[in-house]
Image 1 (cartoon, helix red, strand yellow):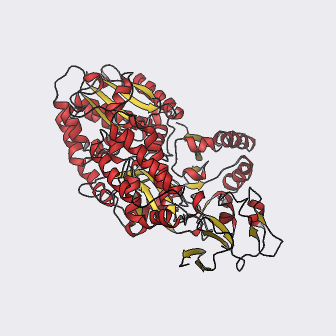
Image 2: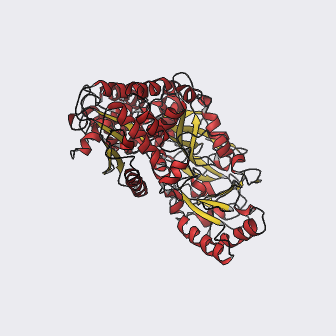
Image 3: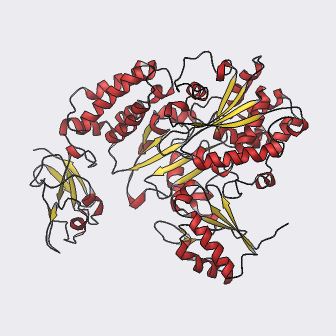
Amino acid sequence: MEKFRANLMLCAGTGCVASGTMKVKKALQEELRKRDLDEEIKIVLTGCNGYCAEGPVMAVYPDEVFYQKLTVEDIPKLVEEHFLKGRPYQKLMFKEPEKKTAIPMMKDIPFFKHQVLRVLRNKGLIDPEKIEEYIARDGYQAAAKALTQMTVEEIIKVVKDSGLRGRGGAGFPTGLKWEFASKVKSDVKFMLCNGDEGDPGAFMDRSVMEADPHSVIEGMIIGAKAIGAHHGYIYVRAEYPLAVKRLQIAIDQATEAGLLGKNILDTGFDFELEIYQGAGAFVCGEETALMRSIEGKRGMPRPRPPFPAHKGLWDKPSVLNNVETLAQIAPIIINGSEWYRSLGTEKSTGTKVFALTGAVNNVGLVEVPMGIPLRTIIYDIGGGIRKGRKYKSVQLGGPSGGCIPESLLDTPVTYEDIVATGAIVGSGGMVVMDDNTCMVGTAKFFLEFTADESCGKCTPCRVGTKILLDILTDITEGRGKEGDIETLQDLGRDIITTSLCGLGQTAPNPVLTTIKYFREEYESHIKDKWCKAGVCRNLVTFWIDEKLCKGCGACLRACPSKAIVGEKKKPHKIIQELCVHCRTCYETCKFKSIRILPAGYESGPSELVEVTATEGETTKGEA
């Protein structure tokens, strides 16, 4: 057995690969060889480590030292300092945003230390293309136990008792779904995995498939045994080439090892598995649309009942679980339902994986116990809001989710509590927004996506989302009128109650929640023709406060339209005819001298606005 002084676990998930992992690996190999260290230090390409925005990242074991933002140029110094002189290389360590203190140990970094890993139990620890490494971490023990020691009823009972709910968005009890399909008499049944993941900003399932594909396969084997299926499909969007590659390698390895195919582990149970690549339609995340896509038909939902457990793929009993749900199965079988229920709440048990993105300092993949407050995720794990700005909202549940304001930041992350806010847990997208965000524009952004992705089968979704989008467009472009807010609310509620599938039933959520919590922004857009965030270009004027401008020239140099003029160390001015309202000057100014005013103000806001110099905000006054 090979023994190495150190193992360099180098992230090779999609994010890190795009940032240069393979070049870093080559540089590491060359430097270790040059220093005669290549026989005692091993480089292992892992899947996603989770800390995606700082890639390429690498953890050194057994030291557990964590490095981020690796570059080819830094490799010689890193190797010299850490592996020759025995002291971690501080330049590449994690540093707290405000204190700038280097933290060498991975377990001490806030992003990692507040997480509880069950789905992501193998992240950054194994080579996903080697089945031996998965097996070395108890891989396939659960499948062996389920096939050789447990009855179908026992498998279903432990999953039901665990309280595991589908992590794809709907939150339906997994064990109950398996039980329904198990009781249906049929010679042919199908076990399916939904790896489509179409939410913008979501990368939970992709990362699991890339980093730990065998955990998904093992979950499917156990599920197939429970419902009596002998054939399965993993539905993955074609835009995930690395996930497809590693899943196929894992399927081939499992088949060769006798863990897939005929007579698995000499138990007489057969289960064959293949990958189906989807074309990227968002609606194919809905289970009946996904099944029609596999059949070679247009991916469109159908009315339910009958439910897929009775009439699914090719009209045969079928169960569809998403990637994260299936990755939870093996630990539940090994450790039992009580172990799983030890985390979370009574109705929302276990852990949940989120893709934490947006205006937070620490962007990445996080796994937390259900019931944890949103504030803990955003501030303790996410490190708070970037550039010291104020929190404004978090979009939870993808484009079909809702926006949650600061007053509700202590809401526990459970299915019930999040729905009560008007949002949904969804598959796990979590987009944080700061006070520079226009909430009307945010609602429009997400509705543009859902309206475009509607399959068009049912009128409420096909026509209703388009009408909602047209009204939002008018509001953001200065054509909003009295009554628009009420129309958005009434139409949104009608779309929710009359649409055929989950896409239409949740598409109005961003609109309804932004009206509920940020109604004043809608009113400002409609009545005052003013986007206070400075995002809607037709509704803003950018103006330089001469009392605060230091004449540093930063805004002048940054302006793409050459609309700013002025001499050094003297107040600058904006030529309104040339201004394209791009916000570049506002983002560039360090002295908060740029004001965002209602559209049409050219000479200054003295008689119309009150300027708050300390916070750089403007408040409309009376003319």
